[in-house]
Image (cartoon, rainbow, N blue to C red; front, top):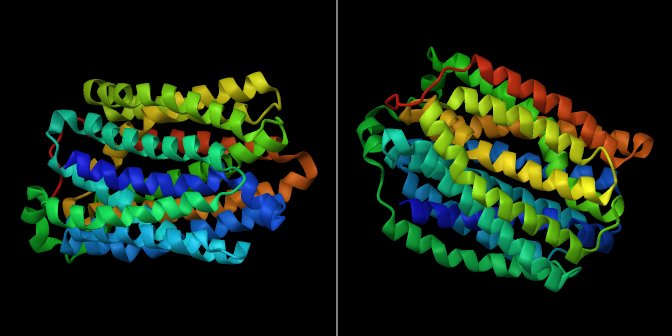
Length: 383
C-alpha cells in the first residue's frame, strides 16, 4: 500500500513541480512580469477549494476510488496544459490539476497513516515524502534537457493516466476506515465536535500563515535564482538536485525522530528552523547564499514534512480525516493568495528577494501556533 500510495504522490509531485521549474521559460514565452505570475499562482491556489468535496467523498466512499480518480484527473489535465496557447489557458488547466493533486496528497497521507502500525506512522509518511521528492527530481533532471521548451514535461505527465487502473485494482481499503464507515456520512459534524474543532481552527491558522511565505517562496525560488542570482537552467537544476539529494536523506530522519521523541517538539522546532533558513535564502543575491540556503531549507523541510504529515492526520477522526486535510489545504490556499499578492505588490518597490524574505515572518508565527496542539505519538487513531 505504501508503494502504491507513493506512486500516486510521486506523479502528483511531478505535476506540481513543472510550473515551478519551468517558470522562467513560461514567463519568457508569455512575456509575463512578476505581478502577473503572482496572479497565476493565486488562481492555482484556489484549486484547494475544489478538492474539499472530493476529499469528503474519500471519507464517505473510500480511499481507493478517489485516489485512482484523482491520478487519472491530473494526468489528463497535463495534456490540456501542454496545449496552452496563452497564460490564461495554462492557469485554467493548472487550476483543475491542482484540485486533483491536492486530493491525491491528502488521501494518500490518510491511507498510509491508517494502515501503518502506531509506532511507525511518521516513518511511513516519510516514504510518501520521499516519493514526492522523487517526483520533483524527475522534473529537475528533465527540464534542463528541454529548456526553455516546457510543454514536453506536461506531455510526459499525461502518461500518469496508466497508473490509475493499477491503483483502482490493487489498493484495498484500510480496515480502520471500514470500521468507521458507518459514521462517515457525518463528515463535517465530526470536525466540529470537541476536541477536533479547536485543533482544526489552530491548523487553519497555522496553514494560512505558513502559506503566506511558502507559496511565493516555492513558486519563485527558481525565478529568483534566474533573475536575481543570474544562474542558467543547468545551474538552477544543479541547485535543485543537490538540495533534493540532501533532503532525501532527511525524510526518514524526521520520521524516526517523530516516532521516537514525539510529534510536537520535533515538529515545532523543525517548522521554525525551516521558516528562518528559507527566509534567509532570499535575503541575498549571492550565489553561495542561494546554494547554502536551498540545501539547508530542503534538509529541514524534508525532515519536517513526515512529522507534521503524521501529526496532523492523527489529530482527526477516521470518518473525517481526508476532509480535514482538504480544509487545511483551503486555508493554505487563502494564505497563499495573500502571500502571492503581497509579493506582487512589493516586488516593484523593494525587489523579489526582500519581498519573499519579509513574508517569512508569517511562517515563523505559524510554527509557534503548533505549540498549542496536543501530542499524538503512540496514541490510537480516533474513530
